[in-house]
Length: 544
Image (cartoon, rainbow, N blue to C red; front, side, top):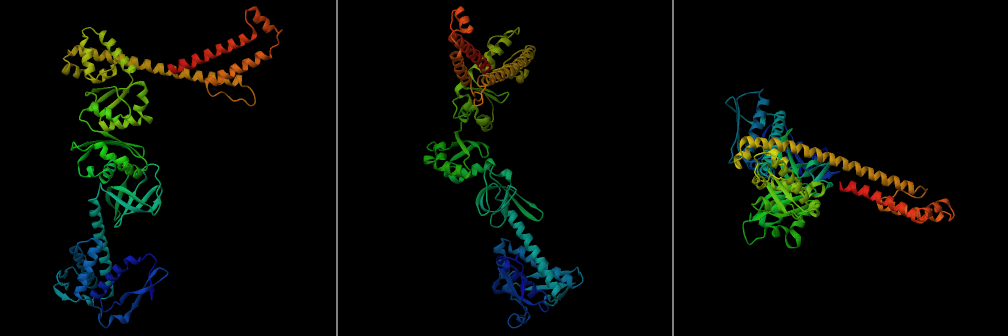
């Protein structure tokens, strides 16, 4: 009795038995023993019995032709391999066995009848009986068959999953290695790299995951299936699965911008006027969109209404911020968006995320400006243009209509749009661009200097507050005040304590009376002076 190693799984036992029997019974049956599987197992390992006496009786080393056809049909259904490929593989295996037995003979022909399974073989034109080839030939046939069938199975898996690229699949996590995970998809194993996983998500063996097939390729005699959860198309596929109207193409996803794990903006439209695109995607009480958000690990999704007008689309894309006005410059592909001061941070978003996604969604380079910044840019451009001889006042209105709202925009546009669209003389256009470039550089330098001075003033104000707080609170238990108001309060309290401790007949009080004030008024006045100076220093730095 011989025992197989633990690596031989029970689900492959039947396949191995069939290959053994085929090689044994059809090639070299006179010298090879018969193998079969025992009903019992030892320690989880399959037990093989080798019984030389079983080669007699009914089989006597032969398998009926119907058994061969049944074997091919079983492997074809189990491995999803075409029957013709299996027939060719078996013929190639028998040819290899015959060449092994006949000293590498070249003219070897083996044919299997596809209808009844009968096998005919010939070497150098002479018919032979494959049963007389011996054990070595049978072993060679078995090895060639296994190799050929594995290649066919690999090709079948490659073709199957190559057609599924871009589709969402569900599998079981089998292994986690350095952040990357291996997922069992049934017929094959897929690889989900760390870079293609949703940031912050953790997976464990035995967990079911859903992802989209990104790529399928052959590497080192194996099929490599790469999955992704961060690709923008993954969001589209989830909407097609969760929203029937999207799957039926009643609602169309026109544009999508995503930062995986954080936020996604999606623009939708409906071909049916009776179907609300945004409402259908959200679902009743947010049921549909909630399922997608849960699948993405809490990633925020903004659904906006698509519009053919770029101005309206940009306004929708920047929601929840309220947009006051939008200027489009087609020459630069840039959109200047005006929002009130209170909406500025909302329009920009956390770390610029809202405006960045809106720009990718609409395809425009978006600049967010407040009304004060817009007015200053227009005034600077107006002053620069009026200083140029030959420039008419109507030119400014034409430039604003083109979406050119600053000197930097004008210098980037160049001469050609001015001459082709506005009809400006070429010489005058070159002079305008030259002056605009110089003035834009000067204004940029001034802005940089102003920012540097503001930062320096703010730093000095913070140092002054910290120094004042450490001086006033110079005790073992008092810490530096956190804010300006804390520092002023501590200064006032300290001054009151100092005033209360001064004697009535002290020279300080006499000096105060000589100036027409008492000691308490003098201390309070000093604190008020410090308060005013500190507040003016900090406020000037912040306003700058």
